[in-house]
Amino acid sequence: MPKPGYAWWHLVLHTKGSWLHGDPRGFRTRQHRIHSSGDYKSPPPSGEHQNLHQYEKEKLKNAVVIPTHLYQIIGQALYLKSSKMNVKTLAISVGPTHAHLQVELENNYKVALKHTAKIKQAASYAVRNALPGSLWARGGKPIAISDLKHQIRVYQYIQTHAKQGDWVWTFQD
Image (cartoon, rainbow, N blue to C red; front, side, top):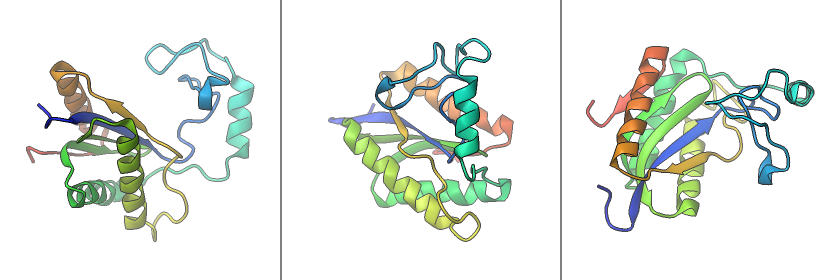
């Protein structure tokens, strides 16, 4: 159970260029001006928005893929920044194109967004010599965890990333 006035959050961070408009896994532009008919769980029909996706890939100068040897450095930077901000963290995973965190923050979306921005900055700073420039895509996706069952599912989901070769840390480690 989170503290009164707090909630558990699932923070999802994507690297620059890892999820573009027109993506075959589904997408939405800001304020849903354009969006696909599906999402990553139920993908849209093959080829939907294919031209938009191709245009976005051509426009992008340099997509970021995190090298394996930097996963742990980034993960530890995410944890360290959260700890310095007195944020309780249950789990973290870092892979080639994204990171996940399960943290306890105020029950306020804007606070979750600010925390996301600060930890992204700390992780970028930690690997600035190896990966200069922008590491993360703009924004982030803090998702409020609704109940204990949801909290357990998120925790297990983050842990499963170890099977894909991602670096994973949990409070049990």
